[in-house]
Amino acid sequence: MRVSTSHLQQLTIFTTVLTGGGIGTMYYLQQKKFSQSDYHQLALQKLEDCPVAMENLGAPPLKVHNIHLTDRYNRVDPYTAQIKIPVSGSKNGGYLFTTSIRDLDTNKWSLKLAVLRLREGQTINLLDPPLAQETTKDTLGLDTEHWN
Image (cartoon, rainbow, N blue to C red):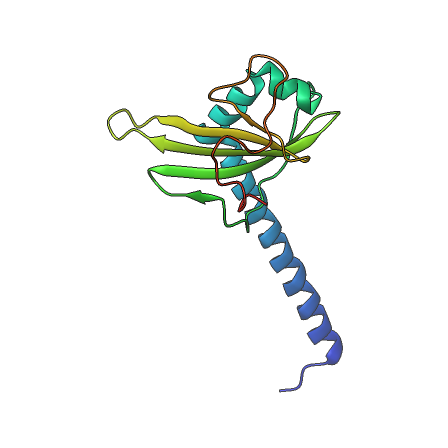
């Protein structure tokens, strides 16, 4: 059986478009799942509740970007969630590093670590926020070397 080159080209194009659409859909759904999760929402709420962090970002408006799915820092299992959320405001940007643990009895997530690391290297511990505009230069005793 002989198939023309034209038909093979059409089949190749169709397969490529279908595969690309499927990958794009899966990426979108994964990002949506992250952004609607309790551990993600808890972290963002903690960031929005910290006036020092919001002022350093130049927010509102706060822009929350997509999580880098290939970043090795991002790990989620049924009981712990460790994610790095890219955020920015009108003045600055950075990453919100979070760790959350799920309570086995209540099935609710609780935030154990929430640290905003700005582009210049300053860090703001959102669980123990500074009173004034005092941000620290990685002096919280956190291992920030692997946070890039």
